[in-house]
Amino acid sequence: MFWTFPAASAKAQIVSQPFKRSQLGLFQGKTKQYGNNVPHSKHKTRRTWLPNVQRKRLFSEALNEHVRVKVTTRALKTIKKHNGIDNYVQNMPSKTLGWEGMRIRLMVKSASKNPRSPAGASKEETNAWIAKRAEELRIQSATDARRVEITRIIRDDLPDLTTARKATEQALKVLGPSAR
Image 1 (cartoon, helix red, strand yellow):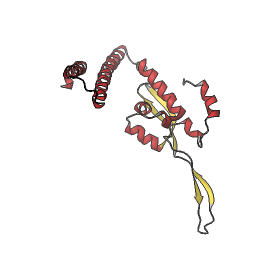
Image 2 (cartoon, helix red, strand yellow):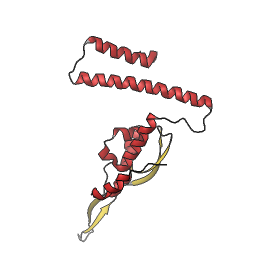
Image 3 (cartoon, helix red, strand yellow):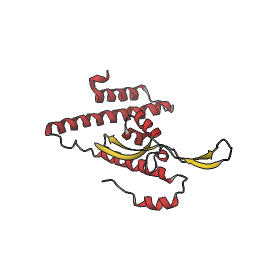
Image 4 (cartoon, rainbow, N blue to C red):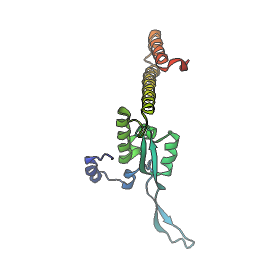
Protein backbone atom coordinates (compact mmCIF):
# COMPACT_ATOMS: atom_id res chain seq x y z
CA MET A 1 0.00 0.00 0.00
CA PHE A 2 2.78 2.44 0.85
CA TRP A 3 5.92 3.00 -1.12
CA THR A 4 9.28 2.31 0.35
CA PHE A 5 12.55 3.91 -0.56
CA PRO A 6 15.31 1.39 -1.25
CA ALA A 7 17.90 4.05 -0.51
CA ALA A 8 16.31 4.80 2.87
CA SER A 9 18.00 1.84 4.56
CA ALA A 10 21.40 2.91 3.21
CA LYS A 11 20.75 6.47 4.35
CA ALA A 12 19.78 5.20 7.78
CA GLN A 13 23.30 3.88 8.23
CA ILE A 14 24.91 7.09 6.95
CA VAL A 15 22.74 9.63 8.77
CA SER A 16 23.73 10.02 12.37
CA GLN A 17 21.13 11.81 14.42
CA PRO A 18 20.59 11.97 18.15
CA PHE A 19 16.97 10.86 17.84
CA LYS A 20 16.54 8.54 14.87
CA ARG A 21 12.97 7.68 15.85
CA SER A 22 11.94 11.16 14.70
CA GLN A 23 12.52 10.04 11.10
CA LEU A 24 9.71 7.49 11.42
CA GLY A 25 6.94 10.03 12.01
CA LEU A 26 5.98 13.69 11.94
CA PHE A 27 7.93 14.96 14.96
CA GLN A 28 8.46 18.57 13.72
CA GLY A 29 11.92 18.95 15.24
CA LYS A 30 11.05 17.50 18.65
CA THR A 31 13.81 15.25 19.99
CA LYS A 32 14.84 13.54 23.18
CA GLN A 33 15.88 16.00 25.89
CA TYR A 34 18.40 15.37 28.65
CA GLY A 35 18.58 16.67 32.16
CA ASN A 36 18.85 15.77 35.83
CA ASN A 37 16.53 14.54 38.53
CA VAL A 38 17.27 16.77 41.52
CA PRO A 39 15.74 15.57 44.82
CA HIS A 40 15.84 17.40 48.15
CA SER A 41 19.33 15.98 48.86
CA LYS A 42 20.64 17.64 45.66
CA HIS A 43 22.07 14.31 44.44
CA LYS A 44 21.65 14.66 40.67
CA THR A 45 20.94 11.68 38.45
CA ARG A 46 20.68 11.85 34.65
CA ARG A 47 17.36 11.31 32.94
CA THR A 48 15.69 11.89 29.57
CA TRP A 49 12.39 13.33 28.39
CA LEU A 50 10.77 11.92 25.26
CA PRO A 51 8.51 13.94 22.96
CA ASN A 52 4.75 13.51 23.30
CA VAL A 53 4.18 11.08 20.43
CA GLN A 54 0.68 9.94 19.47
CA ARG A 55 -0.37 7.40 16.87
CA LYS A 56 -3.05 9.04 14.71
CA ARG A 57 -5.08 8.42 11.59
CA LEU A 58 -5.21 11.64 9.59
CA PHE A 59 -7.47 12.00 6.54
CA SER A 60 -5.72 13.02 3.33
CA GLU A 61 -8.01 14.68 0.79
CA ALA A 62 -5.57 14.09 -2.05
CA LEU A 63 -5.31 10.37 -1.31
CA ASN A 64 -8.99 10.18 -0.31
CA GLU A 65 -8.11 7.89 2.60
CA HIS A 66 -6.75 7.93 6.13
CA VAL A 67 -2.98 7.87 6.69
CA ARG A 68 -1.73 6.27 9.90
CA VAL A 69 1.28 8.11 11.27
CA LYS A 70 3.18 8.72 14.51
CA VAL A 71 2.92 12.42 15.23
CA THR A 72 3.86 14.75 18.09
CA THR A 73 1.25 17.01 19.63
CA ARG A 74 3.17 20.03 18.36
CA ALA A 75 2.97 18.67 14.79
CA LEU A 76 -0.76 17.99 15.29
CA LYS A 77 -1.32 21.65 16.16
CA THR A 78 0.59 22.70 13.06
CA ILE A 79 -1.36 20.24 10.88
CA LYS A 80 -4.57 21.76 12.20
CA LYS A 81 -3.20 25.25 11.48
CA HIS A 82 -2.40 24.23 7.87
CA ASN A 83 -5.93 22.76 7.45
CA GLY A 84 -4.92 19.14 6.98
CA ILE A 85 -2.00 16.85 6.43
CA ASP A 86 -1.88 17.53 2.67
CA ASN A 87 -1.12 21.24 3.10
CA TYR A 88 1.19 20.51 6.02
CA VAL A 89 3.50 18.14 4.11
CA GLN A 90 3.52 20.38 1.03
CA ASN A 91 4.33 23.61 2.90
CA MET A 92 6.81 22.42 5.54
CA PRO A 93 10.55 22.24 4.77
CA SER A 94 11.85 18.74 4.10
CA LYS A 95 14.28 18.97 7.02
CA THR A 96 11.34 19.30 9.41
CA LEU A 97 9.35 16.44 7.84
CA GLY A 98 11.90 13.64 7.99
CA TRP A 99 11.61 10.44 5.96
CA GLU A 100 8.00 9.67 6.84
CA GLY A 101 6.83 13.18 6.01
CA MET A 102 8.67 13.12 2.69
CA ARG A 103 7.08 9.75 1.88
CA ILE A 104 3.62 11.22 2.54
CA ARG A 105 4.54 14.34 0.51
CA LEU A 106 5.44 12.18 -2.50
CA MET A 107 2.20 10.22 -2.14
CA VAL A 108 0.15 13.44 -2.00
CA LYS A 109 1.97 14.95 -5.00
CA SER A 110 1.45 11.86 -7.15
CA ALA A 111 -2.20 11.61 -6.06
CA SER A 112 -2.81 15.26 -6.91
CA LYS A 113 -1.44 14.65 -10.42
CA ASN A 114 -3.57 11.51 -10.85
CA PRO A 115 -6.63 12.00 -8.61
CA ARG A 116 -8.81 9.04 -7.76
CA SER A 117 -12.57 9.32 -7.58
CA PRO A 118 -14.27 8.57 -4.24
CA ALA A 119 -14.56 4.86 -3.56
CA GLY A 120 -18.06 3.39 -3.73
CA ALA A 121 -19.55 6.49 -5.39
CA SER A 122 -22.33 6.37 -7.98
CA LYS A 123 -21.77 7.54 -11.54
CA GLU A 124 -23.45 10.92 -10.88
CA GLU A 125 -21.35 11.49 -7.74
CA THR A 126 -18.19 10.58 -9.64
CA ASN A 127 -19.04 12.99 -12.48
CA ALA A 128 -19.78 15.75 -9.96
CA TRP A 129 -16.50 14.99 -8.21
CA ILE A 130 -14.58 15.15 -11.51
CA ALA A 131 -16.21 18.49 -12.41
CA LYS A 132 -15.40 19.88 -8.97
CA ARG A 133 -11.80 18.67 -9.27
CA ALA A 134 -11.45 20.25 -12.74
CA GLU A 135 -12.74 23.57 -11.36
CA GLU A 136 -10.27 23.35 -8.46
CA LEU A 137 -7.40 22.75 -10.90
CA ARG A 138 -8.48 25.72 -13.05
CA ILE A 139 -8.58 27.95 -9.97
CA GLN A 140 -5.21 26.59 -8.83
CA SER A 141 -3.58 27.38 -12.18
CA ALA A 142 -5.01 30.92 -12.14
CA THR A 143 -3.78 31.38 -8.58
CA ASP A 144 -0.32 30.13 -9.54
CA ALA A 145 -0.17 32.51 -12.52
CA ARG A 146 -1.18 35.40 -10.28
CA ARG A 147 1.40 34.36 -7.66
CA VAL A 148 4.15 34.38 -10.30
CA GLU A 149 3.01 37.83 -11.40
CA ILE A 150 3.05 39.11 -7.82
CA THR A 151 6.54 37.73 -7.12
CA ARG A 152 7.80 39.40 -10.28
CA ILE A 153 6.30 42.71 -9.12
CA ILE A 154 7.80 42.30 -5.64
CA ARG A 155 11.26 41.71 -7.10
CA ASP A 156 11.00 45.10 -8.81
CA ASP A 157 10.80 43.39 -12.17
CA LEU A 158 7.77 45.55 -12.85
CA PRO A 159 5.68 44.71 -15.91
CA ASP A 160 3.98 47.35 -17.97
CA LEU A 161 0.28 48.05 -17.65
CA THR A 162 -0.74 45.75 -20.49
CA THR A 163 0.87 42.67 -18.91
CA ALA A 164 -0.82 43.42 -15.58
CA ARG A 165 -4.18 43.79 -17.33
CA LYS A 166 -3.68 40.52 -19.20
CA ALA A 167 -2.89 38.67 -15.97
CA THR A 168 -5.93 40.18 -14.24
CA GLU A 169 -8.21 39.33 -17.19
CA GLN A 170 -6.87 35.79 -17.30
CA ALA A 171 -7.49 35.31 -13.58
CA LEU A 172 -11.02 36.77 -13.82
CA LYS A 173 -11.80 34.58 -16.83
CA VAL A 174 -10.76 31.43 -14.98
CA LEU A 175 -12.37 32.36 -11.66
CA GLY A 176 -15.59 33.48 -13.34
CA PRO A 177 -18.20 35.94 -12.11
CA SER A 178 -17.73 34.97 -8.46
CA ALA A 179 -14.35 36.81 -8.39
CA ARG A 180 -15.83 40.25 -9.11
